[in-house]
Length: 241
Image 1 (cartoon, helix red, strand yellow):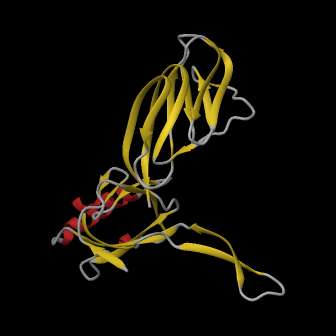
Image 2 (image 1 turned 90 degrees about the horizontal axis):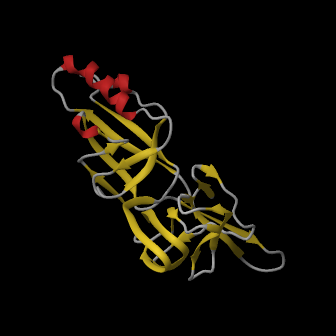
Image 3 (image 1 turned 180 degrees about the vertical axis):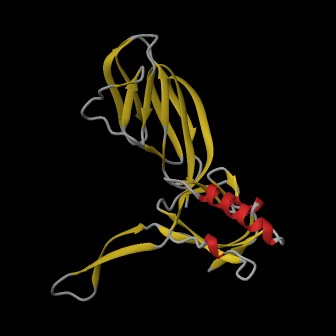
Protein backbone atom coordinates (compact mmCIF):
# COMPACT_ATOMS: atom_id res chain seq x y z
CA UNK A 1 0.00 0.00 0.00
CA UNK A 2 1.27 3.50 -0.85
CA UNK A 3 -0.17 6.84 0.10
CA UNK A 4 -0.43 9.87 -2.20
CA UNK A 5 -0.09 13.36 -0.74
CA UNK A 6 -0.32 16.87 -2.19
CA UNK A 7 0.99 19.07 0.60
CA UNK A 8 4.09 20.61 2.19
CA UNK A 9 7.49 18.92 2.00
CA UNK A 10 10.36 20.46 3.94
CA UNK A 11 13.93 19.38 3.18
CA UNK A 12 16.98 20.66 5.03
CA UNK A 13 14.92 23.58 6.38
CA UNK A 14 13.63 24.56 2.91
CA UNK A 15 9.89 24.44 2.22
CA UNK A 16 9.78 23.00 -1.30
CA UNK A 17 6.04 23.67 -1.45
CA UNK A 18 6.71 27.39 -1.83
CA UNK A 19 8.21 26.61 -5.23
CA UNK A 20 6.42 23.51 -6.44
CA UNK A 21 3.43 21.27 -5.86
CA UNK A 22 4.50 17.87 -4.57
CA UNK A 23 3.07 14.38 -4.75
CA UNK A 24 4.71 11.72 -2.59
CA UNK A 25 4.44 7.98 -2.97
CA UNK A 26 6.12 6.21 -0.10
CA UNK A 27 5.97 2.76 1.47
CA UNK A 28 4.48 2.17 4.91
CA UNK A 29 7.93 1.02 6.06
CA UNK A 30 11.36 0.38 4.63
CA UNK A 31 12.09 -2.75 2.64
CA UNK A 32 12.82 -5.74 4.85
CA UNK A 33 15.68 -8.04 3.82
CA UNK A 34 15.59 -11.53 5.29
CA UNK A 35 18.17 -14.29 5.18
CA UNK A 36 17.58 -18.03 5.42
CA UNK A 37 19.99 -20.94 5.22
CA UNK A 38 19.41 -24.45 3.95
CA UNK A 39 20.47 -27.21 6.30
CA UNK A 40 21.72 -30.42 4.68
CA UNK A 41 19.59 -33.42 5.47
CA UNK A 42 16.44 -31.58 6.44
CA UNK A 43 13.49 -29.92 4.73
CA UNK A 44 13.09 -26.16 4.46
CA UNK A 45 15.39 -23.43 5.65
CA UNK A 46 16.55 -21.96 8.95
CA UNK A 47 15.87 -18.28 9.56
CA UNK A 48 19.11 -16.33 10.07
CA UNK A 49 18.08 -12.68 10.38
CA UNK A 50 16.14 -9.66 9.12
CA UNK A 51 16.98 -6.00 8.71
CA UNK A 52 15.36 -2.91 7.22
CA UNK A 53 17.30 -1.51 4.30
CA UNK A 54 17.58 1.96 2.83
CA UNK A 55 15.28 2.92 -0.02
CA UNK A 56 14.53 5.54 -2.68
CA UNK A 57 11.62 7.93 -2.13
CA UNK A 58 10.30 9.49 -5.38
CA UNK A 59 8.57 12.87 -5.23
CA UNK A 60 6.69 14.12 -8.27
CA UNK A 61 6.83 17.92 -8.57
CA UNK A 62 5.35 20.63 -10.77
CA UNK A 63 5.88 24.38 -10.69
CA UNK A 64 3.77 26.86 -8.74
CA UNK A 65 3.73 29.22 -11.70
CA UNK A 66 1.75 29.73 -14.88
CA UNK A 67 4.18 32.27 -16.33
CA UNK A 68 6.98 30.70 -18.37
CA UNK A 69 9.21 33.66 -17.48
CA UNK A 70 9.32 32.39 -13.87
CA UNK A 71 10.54 28.90 -14.78
CA UNK A 72 14.29 29.58 -14.80
CA UNK A 73 14.19 31.49 -11.50
CA UNK A 74 12.16 28.78 -9.74
CA UNK A 75 14.42 26.07 -11.16
CA UNK A 76 17.51 27.73 -9.70
CA UNK A 77 15.83 28.24 -6.33
CA UNK A 78 14.66 24.63 -6.31
CA UNK A 79 18.16 23.36 -7.12
CA UNK A 80 19.58 25.37 -4.21
CA UNK A 81 16.89 24.00 -1.89
CA UNK A 82 17.54 20.39 -2.91
CA UNK A 83 21.33 20.42 -2.86
CA UNK A 84 23.01 18.94 0.18
CA UNK A 85 26.33 17.11 0.44
CA UNK A 86 25.06 14.93 3.28
CA UNK A 87 21.71 13.54 4.48
CA UNK A 88 19.41 16.18 5.97
CA UNK A 89 15.95 16.20 7.62
CA UNK A 90 13.05 15.52 5.26
CA UNK A 91 9.54 16.22 6.58
CA UNK A 92 6.69 14.59 4.67
CA UNK A 93 3.15 16.02 4.50
CA UNK A 94 1.40 13.12 6.22
CA UNK A 95 3.75 13.18 9.24
CA UNK A 96 4.80 16.80 9.89
CA UNK A 97 6.21 16.21 13.40
CA UNK A 98 8.71 13.49 12.41
CA UNK A 99 11.44 13.44 9.80
CA UNK A 100 13.66 11.12 7.79
CA UNK A 101 17.35 11.65 7.12
CA UNK A 102 17.54 11.80 3.31
CA UNK A 103 19.53 13.18 0.40
CA UNK A 104 18.46 14.11 -3.13
CA UNK A 105 20.10 11.67 -5.49
CA UNK A 106 20.30 10.64 -9.13
CA UNK A 107 19.05 12.59 -12.14
CA UNK A 108 16.59 15.29 -11.10
CA UNK A 109 15.80 16.43 -14.66
CA UNK A 110 15.21 19.97 -13.40
CA UNK A 111 15.91 21.25 -16.90
CA UNK A 112 12.90 19.26 -18.09
CA UNK A 113 10.43 21.51 -16.24
CA UNK A 114 9.10 23.64 -19.08
CA UNK A 115 5.73 24.66 -20.44
CA UNK A 116 5.65 21.48 -22.52
CA UNK A 117 6.85 19.22 -19.69
CA UNK A 118 5.65 20.80 -16.43
CA UNK A 119 6.38 17.86 -14.10
CA UNK A 120 9.42 15.85 -13.09
CA UNK A 121 10.45 13.49 -10.33
CA UNK A 122 13.00 14.17 -7.60
CA UNK A 123 14.34 11.10 -5.83
CA UNK A 124 15.48 11.16 -2.21
CA UNK A 125 17.54 8.30 -0.87
CA UNK A 126 16.76 7.32 2.71
CA UNK A 127 19.70 5.42 4.19
CA UNK A 128 18.45 5.37 7.78
CA UNK A 129 14.96 3.80 7.75
CA UNK A 130 13.94 5.24 11.15
CA UNK A 131 11.93 8.44 11.58
CA UNK A 132 13.11 10.99 14.14
CA UNK A 133 10.63 12.87 16.29
CA UNK A 134 10.44 15.18 19.26
CA UNK A 135 13.66 16.30 20.94
CA UNK A 136 13.58 15.46 24.63
CA UNK A 137 15.59 16.77 27.57
CA UNK A 138 15.84 15.77 31.22
CA UNK A 139 17.83 17.60 33.92
CA UNK A 140 19.19 15.04 36.39
CA UNK A 141 21.13 14.98 39.65
CA UNK A 142 23.28 12.29 41.25
CA UNK A 143 21.38 9.09 41.99
CA UNK A 144 18.59 7.36 40.09
CA UNK A 145 16.53 9.10 37.44
CA UNK A 146 13.55 7.68 35.53
CA UNK A 147 12.97 8.69 31.90
CA UNK A 148 10.64 7.77 29.06
CA UNK A 149 12.42 7.58 25.74
CA UNK A 150 9.26 8.04 23.66
CA UNK A 151 8.92 6.72 20.12
CA UNK A 152 8.87 2.99 19.42
CA UNK A 153 12.55 2.41 18.61
CA UNK A 154 15.67 2.52 20.80
CA UNK A 155 17.59 5.80 20.63
CA UNK A 156 20.91 7.28 21.75
CA UNK A 157 21.43 10.05 24.28
CA UNK A 158 23.87 12.92 24.49
CA UNK A 159 24.86 13.67 28.07
CA UNK A 160 26.42 16.89 29.38
CA UNK A 161 27.52 16.47 32.99
CA UNK A 162 29.04 18.61 35.71
CA UNK A 163 30.61 16.04 38.08
CA UNK A 164 31.89 16.32 41.62
CA UNK A 165 35.67 16.43 42.01
CA UNK A 166 37.31 13.01 41.82
CA UNK A 167 38.84 10.47 39.47
CA UNK A 168 35.73 8.72 38.16
CA UNK A 169 32.22 9.54 36.91
CA UNK A 170 29.72 7.02 35.65
CA UNK A 171 26.28 6.82 34.07
CA UNK A 172 24.49 3.47 34.21
CA UNK A 173 21.41 1.99 32.60
CA UNK A 174 20.17 0.22 35.73
CA UNK A 175 17.69 -1.90 33.76
CA UNK A 176 20.36 -3.48 31.52
CA UNK A 177 23.53 -3.04 33.59
CA UNK A 178 25.28 -1.18 30.76
CA UNK A 179 27.34 1.82 31.76
CA UNK A 180 29.93 4.38 30.68
CA UNK A 181 32.63 5.12 33.26
CA UNK A 182 34.94 8.09 32.74
CA UNK A 183 38.36 7.50 34.29
CA UNK A 184 40.28 10.75 34.48
CA UNK A 185 40.95 13.50 36.99
CA UNK A 186 37.84 15.62 37.41
CA UNK A 187 37.16 18.90 39.19
CA UNK A 188 33.96 20.76 39.95
CA UNK A 189 34.66 22.95 36.92
CA UNK A 190 34.96 19.93 34.57
CA UNK A 191 32.37 19.39 31.84
CA UNK A 192 31.84 15.85 30.61
CA UNK A 193 30.14 15.24 27.27
CA UNK A 194 29.05 11.72 26.33
CA UNK A 195 27.82 10.95 22.81
CA UNK A 196 26.31 7.47 22.99
CA UNK A 197 25.80 7.23 19.21
CA UNK A 198 29.36 8.25 18.33
CA UNK A 199 30.76 6.31 21.32
CA UNK A 200 32.83 9.30 22.35
CA UNK A 201 33.53 11.05 25.66
CA UNK A 202 35.20 14.42 26.14
CA UNK A 203 36.19 16.35 29.24
CA UNK A 204 36.44 20.11 28.71
CA UNK A 205 36.42 19.49 24.96
CA UNK A 206 39.24 16.94 24.92
CA UNK A 207 38.87 13.19 24.32
CA UNK A 208 38.76 11.33 27.61
CA UNK A 209 39.33 7.64 28.42
CA UNK A 210 36.59 5.31 29.62
CA UNK A 211 36.95 2.03 31.46
CA UNK A 212 37.58 -1.02 29.28
CA UNK A 213 34.24 -2.56 30.28
CA UNK A 214 32.21 0.54 29.40
CA UNK A 215 29.41 -0.04 26.91
CA UNK A 216 27.76 2.92 25.17
CA UNK A 217 24.07 2.14 25.38
CA UNK A 218 20.67 2.98 23.91
CA UNK A 219 17.53 3.86 25.81
CA UNK A 220 14.17 2.28 25.04
CA UNK A 221 10.77 2.81 26.62
CA UNK A 222 10.80 3.56 30.36
CA UNK A 223 14.37 3.50 31.67
CA UNK A 224 16.04 3.84 35.05
CA UNK A 225 19.44 5.52 34.93
CA UNK A 226 21.99 6.23 37.66
CA UNK A 227 24.49 9.07 37.80
CA UNK A 228 27.28 8.80 40.34
CA UNK A 229 27.83 12.49 41.11
CA UNK A 230 27.04 16.06 40.17
CA UNK A 231 24.36 17.03 37.68
CA UNK A 232 23.68 16.12 34.07
CA UNK A 233 21.55 17.15 31.13
CA UNK A 234 20.23 14.19 29.12
CA UNK A 235 19.11 14.90 25.57
CA UNK A 236 17.84 12.66 22.76
CA UNK A 237 15.37 12.46 19.90
CA UNK A 238 12.53 9.99 19.65
CA UNK A 239 12.93 7.32 16.99
CA UNK A 240 9.99 5.75 15.17
CA UNK A 241 9.38 2.98 12.67
